[in-house]
Length: 62
Image 1: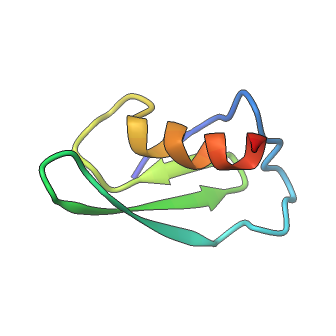
Image 2: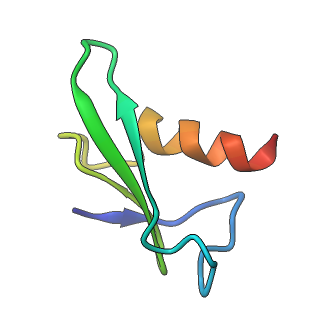
């Protein structure tokens, strides 16, 4: 999995590193978004920052 840097969350040294969030894709597929020291990763097929990662990032802004 690739880690994508976050524009909203400083993940370096963040206490949530290693936390995994289950997400459901638009077709019902289940994916996992994980915070890493470098940003967020998702095990969906996308190779760019996906909507699953953006959704989790948005939760940090709320």
